[in-house]
Image (cartoon, rainbow, N blue to C red):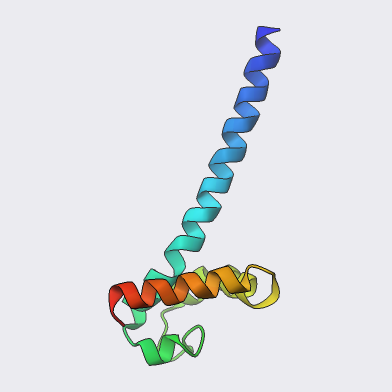
Length: 90
């Protein structure tokens, strides 16, 4: 009984850890883009083009861009982006 309970708690812990990593990723993309690019006008047009963005930013932001363009998360992610941009002052 104790081993079964321990296995379930590990599964819950791993599930929460994976969800936490995903949420932290989603929360980190807009500030990363702002600090890497530094221009709100460019950022407001979507992910920066290749001449401005560094390679890591292009790869790092691709999943976020896909989520914010093709899933129902579009509206909360766009609202979060706006909030971050206003908070930072860009």
